[in-house]
Image (cartoon, rainbow, N blue to C red; front, side, top):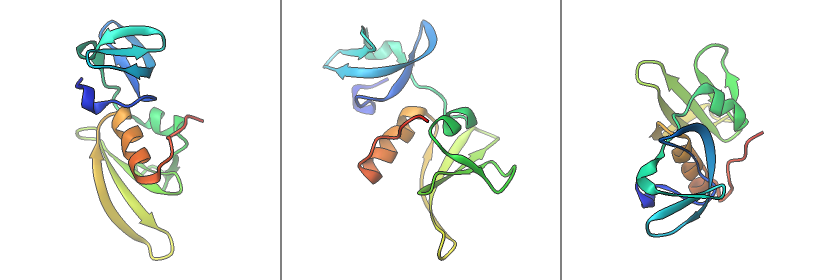
Length: 123
């Protein structure tokens, strides 16, 4: 991974572990992951899945459609390539706005923070 992809608080895995680690500190060459410093190229992104969406408080919307909603954003899982399409949804008008395609947990965390100014918390 590249340094400009990560923020403090992002969740990533490492090449040697399937566990999710919280980014605690960043510098020019190293990432502190919950007390362990590793090089950026040792970090790997976590694919965004239904399980992660549920952990972040998204609820399945429109039974079985692969769509999830958290009160602000709608995410649709495309089964072919596992890309998540993030839309803003206005309940009063029923309109959708395509905002971004996302593949990884840290991308959703960064996107959410950029648009809301709040961290995406796990529930």
